[in-house]
Image 1 (cartoon, helix red, strand yellow):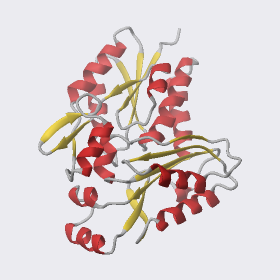
Image 2: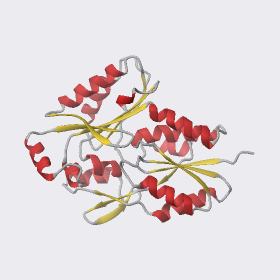
Image 3: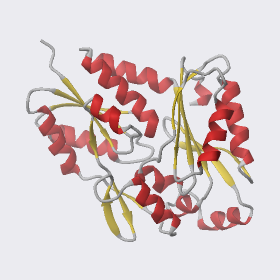
Image 4: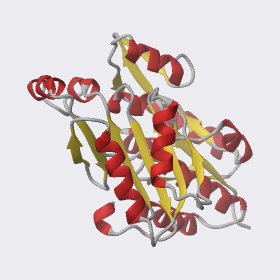
Length: 288
C-alpha cells in the first residue's frame, strides 16, 4: 500500500485560507526583520501590518528561516509513516530551499524537497496540484513531474513602483536609486529559473500597462488559465485596469488579487504588483 503524502510549503505562498483548509496544506512561516526586530510571518506580523510599516518608511529585511522549525514540522508530519513533500520558494529569492534540504537530511521522516523556482501564486499553482495529486494517490515522482509542467506554464513579472526596498536590499546601488527617484523610474522584473532580471523600465505607470498589453498578445494562442495580481497595497482601480488589460472579455481564467507575503514585500516595496500567469500550454523559453 502506498504511503500517504503530506504537502508542506512556506509562507511566501499565495493561498487563500479556504484552499489551505480544503487541501490540508502545512505552511512553515518565514521571518522578516523591521527596525532590528524579527517577526514571524502570520504569527506576530500580518501582511496588512507590513504594508503599514512600509507606508511609515520602515524598510524590512529578509531573515534566515529557522532550521529547527523545519525539522520539527517534518518530524511531526511523518511520525505516522506518511511521506512529506516540501515545495519551497525559488532559491533565487531565499535560502529557504537550502534550509529545507538540510532539515530533510536531519529529519526522522521520509522528506522530499522541491525547488519550485517560483513563489507567491506561482508556488501555489504547484502546491495545489501536488495536494490534489496526493489525494488521488499519485506518487512523489508523478507529483514532481506535474510541478515541473506547471512551472513551464507559469510566468512571474513584478511591476516595481518604488525602488526603496531594492536599494536597501543591495539589489540596486544607492547612487542609482537616487537617480531613478529623480526621474520616477519604474521597473518590471521577471523571475527566471536562475535569476531575477530587469525586463523593462520606464518613467510612469503607463510602462506597466504597456507591458500588460504585451502579456495579453503573447497569450492570444495560449490562453491564460489563472491570473494573480499579488500586490503591496496597490490601489484596487489600478489592479482592475491591469486585469482588464491582460484578460480578454470572454476569458474563463480564475483570478485573485491579494496582498503578497511579507517575504516578497521586502524585495518589491510599496505599491508593487506581481503579475503571475498560468497558461494552458508551456511558455516559450524566452518568456520564462
